[in-house]
Image (cartoon, rainbow, N blue to C red; front, side, top):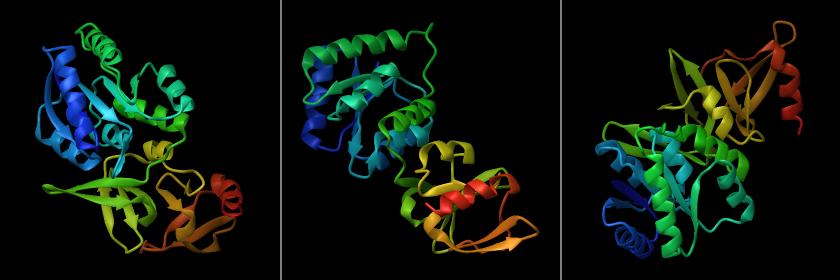
Length: 252
């Protein structure tokens, strides 16, 4: 079996890798990644591992971001210093987790459970759905997007996004500077990982950021037209069925 260890503290990563090989010599640690970016780049360039060991909190985001960006289907063991509320969420979602500092015996038990999960008769987990469920139950929301441009990955903070738009079968993040970035999530998926206090889906085509709404005008009866910072089109319209909710959301 092959695994990827993602941990932003180098010594901790090396220690965890050594513990894995001591607990089960049949497992090969293919690589150590210290950030969301490094993990995504490695997974993009290499054959998928049989399972991953992921630290929750990383320097450039949460390991949930790795699951959402790659969509990789494989078992995951989280290492975490989270409180009992988060641990309860992991248990309810049948996720393996190890509290820091990692105990060698608990690691060995988790590795045995992973072996059972990767058996051919067992279906692989949908890691995007897993990440979404854990975000909801641990009350965390996306703070950044990793944008792949050719062979480079750029970081787009959510705070720089004024709207998300669906067009021509793709989804784009519109920055406050007026640039469009192609992202791999649908508007439906974005609705599960964005903070609802900051973002609102106004129609089938748009999700907008509350602090990017520069003005609102009445358009064609009861409909509303928005002027959004960085969005150049004049047709950002709130659908009729969402006008009431949108007014309440803006007035919070």
